Length: 113
Image 1: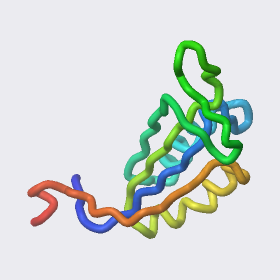
Image 2: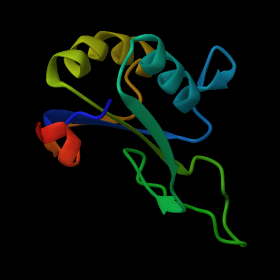
Image 3: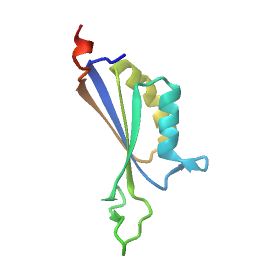
């Protein structure tokens, strides 16, 4: 069933080498989001970026490719995303950056009726 209407988009920006108990942090965020019943989560791997440390990380051939940026994006209804935030805080432990934005989900014609 497709749904549409107001929702929140949560984006957690972490590094690709960040771990949670010896497992990739981004993957653990996705697993927890699924277990929490959130509508969907995706991981997007960046090719270049920098964070609080101000060091630029790049996927270029002559660059160090450790610590590339990873964005974990979750979209669901506001109350469900907000309920997930304590788990995300536990996983991040002060790392990364989290944004929460209001979005409008397009559910297609069948969601209108």
